[in-house]
Length: 262
Ligand code: ADP
Ligand code: MG
Image 1 (spheres, rainbow, N blue to C red):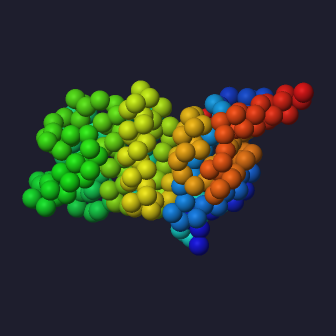
Image 2 (image 1 turned 45 degrees about the vertical axis):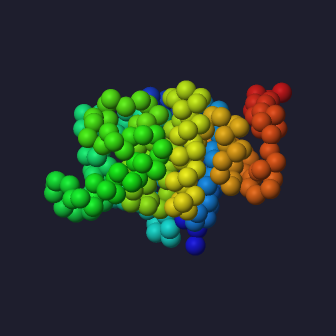
Image 3 (image 1 turned 90 degrees about the vertical axis):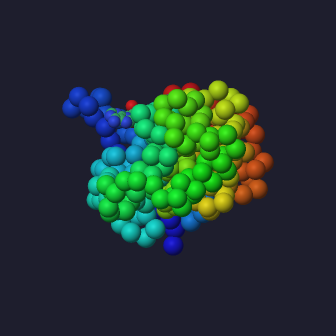
């Protein structure tokens, strides 16, 4: 059974009510993702990449079509009821963590997110040890700063912690929306290496949006290209490994030509 199945997904935005302002952000999209698959997603601005993640996480309800997560029909399920299935990391390092509280408290909130008894505070020795080990595994030297406020950390450090928090409960699907785009190239590289470690060690089904085509080729085992709310290219295995940035750029240019009627 696939981990994700989107059937004929349609999402239309119309902020003004005028037909000419209508945006088809998701255009009758079909997408099936197997358990453990790591899919990288590329596409120009406004091609519908974030909409796909927003539809999966329930930020937006589909206007038509259906969505299944691990066999369960979640089409009508509100966002808060899907949260337990999903881990999500955004571009902005300030979004995934709370700056005013410590690393340890952030981790604790993430680990209690899906349990009842959310208000039970205080740390057990084992819990502290667990966070220490997880943070130490990042190799960023943050394990001795567990009691420091997250607001004192760099963007890359925050993204690394957000990744741990998003995967603490082993989500059914991990959604990464340009999570390294706000980082400098060196830090982005480190966060991607950490991402790879977490995804492969936990065999996480993962969707990763990136505007860096080299990263889209290097990471993951399947690559999807979006254009105008549609998937225009979908490739995996050897064929994906052998892709080049030039080839992908040509594909984009072809699409631009077709859509502008040249
Ligand atoms: P991408 O992430 O690929 O840059 P998006 O999925 O954010 O693209 O956007 C796809 C299209 O849908 C764009 O035309 C965008 O303007 C529109 N769109 C996305 N989200 C909204 C929204 N909340 N309200 C109105 N229009 C939106
Ligand atoms: Mg986006």
